Image (cartoon, rainbow, N blue to C red):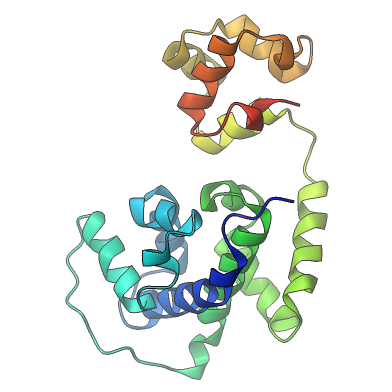
Length: 211
């Protein structure tokens, strides 16, 4: 498996995102589900998931939150981080999410397809003292239980497009998209320009779409 970035940054990244989740909920009164959604559509989140050292090692979780809020047009004055043990699950959610994002190489948006913040909170009591490998096993089982979908369909759904919308955005015929998703046509035999158009609109690599 290809990880998202160099392993030397993982520990710092986990601590930063853990603190960010805790700071967002505890100090800024932002629901974790809302913060997660902001994370995976933002420039900040994209830099973090690529392992940009400025984001995964060069700042605190509070600084990450404040930059994210600023990017989203929300003004928040910096406040002293308040730590309450009742919010330990918020820290763990960010901490373990950072680990699995690095481990899997998925984007945060892709991960949100398989696990929500509510799911993470529900797993806290049974997994927060377990090794990260236990969480990895849980995630692999969750992913394997998902209904079989072609890679094209998975990426399309992650971006929120209907088949018709994707056809209109890419210029690829609707019937062709349907056939690729159903397996009636092999996307590996599609022209490079077709796969490129789809990958470009779905914000993934061309290789990501090949079965």
